[in-house]
Image 1: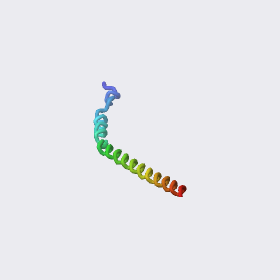
Image 2 (image 1 turned 180 degrees about the horizontal axis):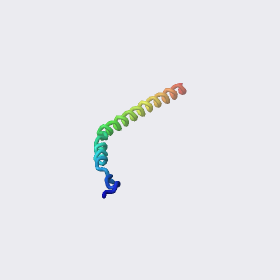
Image 3 (image 1 turned 90 degrees about the vertical axis):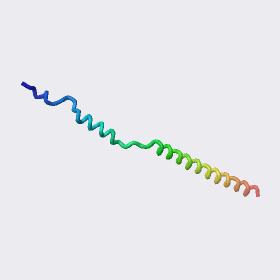
Image 4 (image 1 turned 30 degrees about the vertical axis):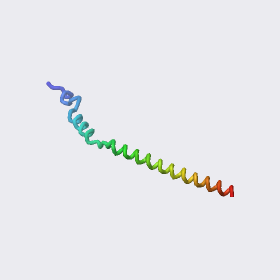
Length: 69
């Protein structure tokens, strides 16, 4: 005679294969796209710093000329 608990397997192979399929469906991000985005952000921040320093230098020099005259 068979026991009732013997009919149910402890490890269901169908769910394991479904999980592996789900892992394969996960989208991966291209590393080159991320690196290009970082480079573009670095260029933008560098350009902002250059513009800010030029404006600051112009402001300081114009104030110095104003006080001298």
